[in-house]
Image (cartoon, rainbow, N blue to C red; front, side, top):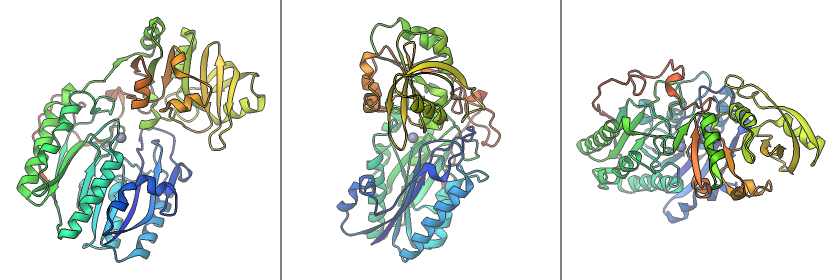
Length: 473
Ligand SMILES: [Zn+2]
């Protein structure tokens, strides 16, 4: 069996003014060493020959530049064309791609592949559960499956499921039928984690709907809410060999999600910036980890919104580490001044100029990390240590702090530009709060100006009524 692998993955916030450019994508082809790390399970399928075309991934950000998308798409199609005929294609996707000037970028991507490989080739995709699915996507794919955990700890497992389903269908000559139920609910990932209720029990219901034949797989997509596009909703999907069974599985999961829509809550206390700071300053256990959620880089925040830091400079906690502020010019100034120098800077507020303004700060250059790809500086302003990075960087691992000579457990307050904490940060935090701060991924959804989403949709139309409608493909 000849199987091509490719894909494009980006969570693009339509409210961010910071474009995602071609250079922001990491392009992986079969010859790259990381290719095998992404798909370690391929050796378990000796009956198939896999051809890695191009898989493009970028850190969540603002709209993808049309020229970047066009260049990646044309490389993929060119490589696919050279491999024809193919029995199957596996697409490693995210689902929340927004390309400037184009609605439903994944729909465009998948339709182009379908047109090239023809109707007999089976196409399977894996999605992040924060991806938004359209009818066009359902039409183009034969198999779709998504993550079942947030924070995502089943990424490799999900990719493997997409490949394994694809190979089984090819082996047994199955062309799966698909049931798709759009759930008119738009909620943030910070409320819909699968680590607490109701996300936990909703996702735990998925395996019970799968019997392996009539229903071969089922998926619930939370969707990505900071995407002002008509396809922005949650949805439930079931694939299999029996229309009635897949319709019922998708309806059951959709109804469950809908019933619990008002129960989704932040997993930790969510407070104003000032309240988060005051509470953390009074806490004796350390570190207290605060999420600067409006500028969460892992959801598309620009990484240079200054509101939180501005309040911290006013409150003057004795010991706070701020991870991090993206500012290439400020990093360069610190590098020029050298370790130990005192510098006057105006940082941040440039990438996300819509939600932020530059902030003056004076501090000592305490440590320099000369990473050629992303030099980083630790600036100490009276006990408030600000990590400055030349490029956007999300601090999710303890090692990233250690690399800057910071032992997280020794500090009172650590602020990260993240939403819910990933497992490594969670393990480190004695206490965690979420600051309802401004930025492109503001948690105050009702304050965002949506123009293109399908209405009615909860929570924007709080009193709406709804019952599941199944679309079969
Ligand atoms: Zn996600």
